[in-house]
Image (cartoon, rainbow, N blue to C red; front, side):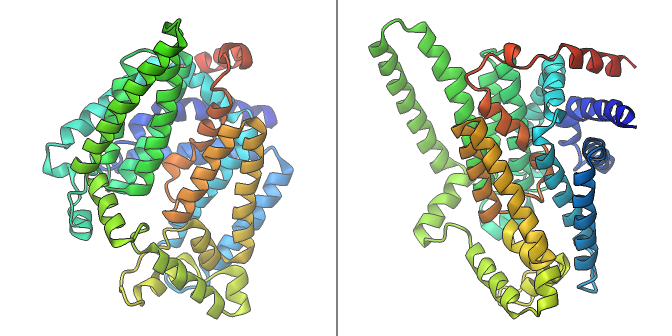
Length: 411
């Protein structure tokens, strides 16, 4: 049984990574692609976790908590979607120490040209949508009072978060074999993220882009300079150019406009602090049953709709949404998952741990688990940070896995 699950899991992870850029980017136009991608993710994680008895008991408890919180509010239109995304988040983090992401690396290394073709086409389409009305969200434009770019995705936040996921794949492709034109692809994706106006995911995209620049631009240039002084002059000149580019981006992109507006109004979280305050009050006023098992996802959304701003939205904060929607037991499970990930990442490297801290901040200030297209690839980012200074061909002996991947794709 274990061998069958292993072979099945190998098939799912192969097709998941091989088709990931395409399937994650056409859901707005072909909803079936989004469904297929979700099924691939869930089946991959199931095959990874089912052989582990302790994990099965853990997920049985989680399923029970989800069912109880589901029954806490009569309307359940949003709860199942949040449950699905949270299961993907927990499953991905649980699989970080397994061989699942080693297999993912094998697929990236083996079929990087196919992935690059997909990434290039996606960037081309996103750039084309900059000049089309369909590339902008009317809803967010009215809400933000600025042009809200969404590219080929459903909304600006989804666009920026999906770009973060694509940049993680670009990091691994570059680590395997860097080419100069990869910088153009990364710069193009960064520009698309910057004009969305979604500040938190854009900062995340910039952080991943900074890692790319340090690893594949600055370090490679250093190897070309025999004199350290000349190298430092080159770094200073490059930094000056980057500062000028940053100023241009701030003055001429939606991201920059919203950041300047936030600084002027001293409202850095776009009013989400009020949501956090409201959620704390909701938890405090709840009876012991609702404190333990939550008010249901829809209960929290409905509660926000009855507040003074009158907008039925989720908390945009993973910790508060889980605490109020699914209860304190589920909240502790969620927090322990982050703590376990943080400890594991710091054991790998300091930079990996710092990236985890950045993602915890994203989860707190904007919400993360609902963006499953990114969370499924986050372990790849954490693991990458551990191998930044390592020759991965020596560290990851994947000859056997590569044979399995080849046989899967040929079949």
